[in-house]
Length: 178
Ligand code: PRP
Image 1 (tube, rainbow, N blue to C red):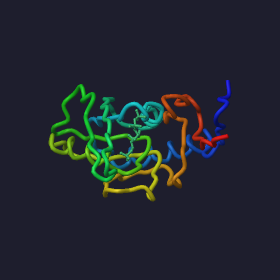
Image 2 (tube, rainbow, N blue to C red; image 1 turned 90 degrees about the vertical axis):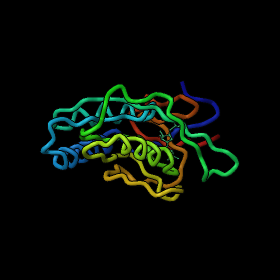
Image 3 (cartoon, helix red, strand yellow; image 1 turned 30 degrees about the vertical axis):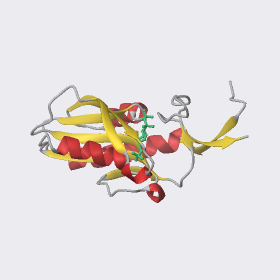
Image 4 (tube, rainbow, N blue to C red; image 1 turned 135 degrees about the vertical axis):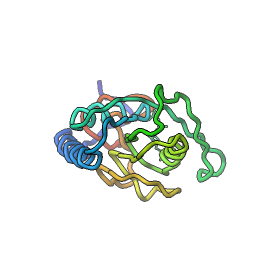
């Protein structure tokens, strides 16, 4: 049922996402081609759709794990605190790790998560984000792969929510308030 307060305009189609996911998975497969096992870590909740599609296209032995982080803004947005709400189930010391994020906005979440996981001494750790909003960046982050660069729009779908809704859209849409 359509929401009376806003409409959603398609921004990136399911077909374009699928094509990009396939390319990213090929690059990831080639980068980690000598691994005995790749631990693919999804950041909850937004990455759950992307990780499901990406993981099925990666042609390597993989293990899936999840981590949930939440960022709390205080009066200064640039001094956000990132809190770990759910940690990984498994160990990553000496392992190859790929962190999968739906969107990099200010960069605080990914920066904090990468710092935390790097402190556990993985063999290699890289990140892959489906969407990137470079105009919103507040901190430098190291993400080797990025699906699409997008402008600073209010987006939903393919795992991303608006007040916890619309995560199940198969495409990325732009919210337009009526
Ligand atoms: C969103 C998104 C990223 C983060 C990006 O998560 O999924 O994890 O914000 O923002 P940043 O680059 O400014 O840190 P959110 O906290 O909305 O949780 P969700 O994944 O459960 O939707």
